[in-house]
Amino acid sequence: MVNGFAICLVAVFALCPKALAEDYFKAANELYDKGEYKQAVKMYRAAIQDGRYEPFAWFNLGNTLVQLGKNNVAMVAYKRTVELMPDFTKAWVLLGDLYYLGSDYGLAIVAYKRALELGEDTDHIHYALGECFIKSRSLALAQKHFEAATRLNPDRIDAWYGLAEVYEKLGDYEYAIKTLKRAVDNSVAAGADVHYTLSHYYSKMGQSKKAIREMENGLLTDPQNVSARRYLAHMYLEDASPWMAIFTLEEGLRFKKDSDQLYVDLGQIYFSQNRFDEALENYMSAWKMGNSQGRIGAENVGNSYYNAGDEAKAQEIYQRIIGKK
Image (cartoon, rainbow, N blue to C red; front, side, top):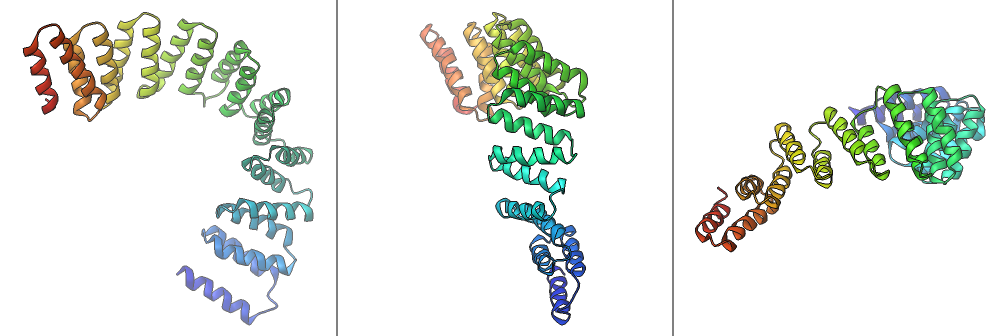
């Protein structure tokens, strides 16, 4: 069906060499809407050659080439668009996006600023400029544009993160924390990751209790995050609260019973407390799930009994390991 449509178009244009540009342009747009990007490219090129719709055909050609993953060629199309129509703000924005994706931050800044000059004052442009400036180590300008992005769209959580990153790079963790707390107050998009980042900042300031509290807050909305839960358990151990580490890991198993790594972590804590029977059961749970650390841990439990002179108990454990029982 797709090929038949393309052949039909070719036949019409072959019979009507003086077809208007709008025919090519309309056909190209229809192909684009159908996702037939390669065929659309041919029609947009035909419209460009005709000339009447040239700026818009170049612009849509750029969009089509982006869909095909040909960003470098799309960049040429957008450049040609702004040459023919210097006040076409959308083309400047998309040109800036492609420069940014290509890590050419200087040219991206030029394109975005031109869009701003033309009145395209959006959170996307300010966020993108913030990213360009932070990657170019112009922190004051990055701060300015991230703040503008958050004013225009308080729900733009990545702009809040960008602003916090500026303060982090300045070594000002207090302002980084204040920024993310503002994000929590102003953005409905603020989720668990904000709390995890706050925890990181508090840790950098040596405030372990507050760091732990923020990790707890994050897990309240993200209870199945095994990595975060394991990290919180580690924080409790560092804070000399092994019972809380155990509670945290066991709570994790309530949400994800199939997490072999949580069993390994529990086994390690129990083993360090010489609670060998509890360590063994957790290690064996992990080993039954195929985690080799579980097997190693269980063998260490068996070795502990063997070294203590209880060879029978040790042999019983070794047999359980072999049989995964």
